[in-house]
Length: 159
Image (cartoon, rainbow, N blue to C red):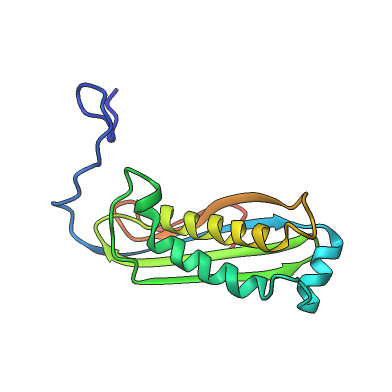
């Protein structure tokens, strides 16, 4: 068995994508921040003491998508040509969705997952004074397009 991210001696390496042709690619990830009912109320009322939680989390997620290779040592530096992070307060917490787009040699799944994860962390940071039990749940890729493997949609999810 051979591994794409290990050389013959078993050392980690970044896969060489030099010969691949750039293609348009996109990935969408989702996650959930579970909050106490009083936090949900404060979010809906705009009454969180630290300020506009959703705005801060949105910017944090976009910034994170662009910084993914700084966090994941074998991720390629690619052009993040589009990043949208949407958050919604719902019963039980905050739903987060990030879609990242590029026209490059490798996909943006890690960038989408990083955007959702960091947006979720920003929500936790902003509300932790109200609810120490806030938690991040179900961060996952739900759809991708482009590249050699083409389009994919997680069963049971909508795009």
